[in-house]
Image 1 (cartoon, rainbow, N blue to C red):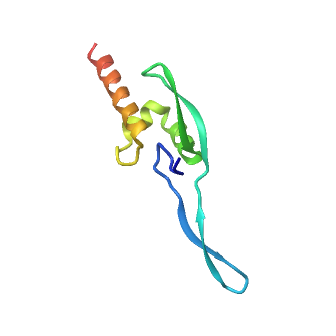
Image 2 (tube, rainbow, N blue to C red):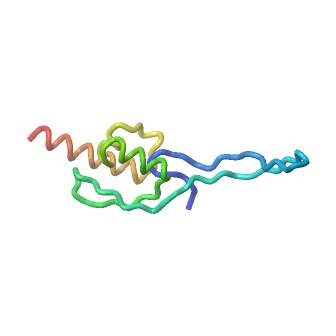
Image 3 (cartoon, rainbow, N blue to C red):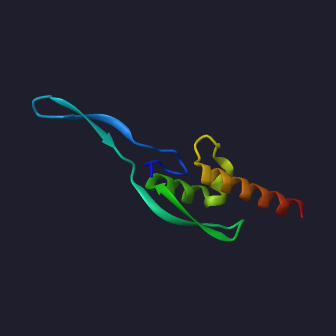
Length: 98
């Protein structure tokens, strides 16, 4: 299982540990990923995703999972999130048409 946020695309970063003697060794910075259950109001179901804490705050700021998916471009989203976005878009378009 890769260390990538399913909503924001945030992944690991590479940097250096720097000692007091200024020796540099490679290290990785991993995102703070959490297993969360987010509610989709359009679909009426809950969805389990692996999301960074920054992603959780962003979703809450925008106003929920459905709004986040509609506003986010597909290249940042994981395959599961893209499928979810497609389902939400279909559901919202049918609600507007009806």
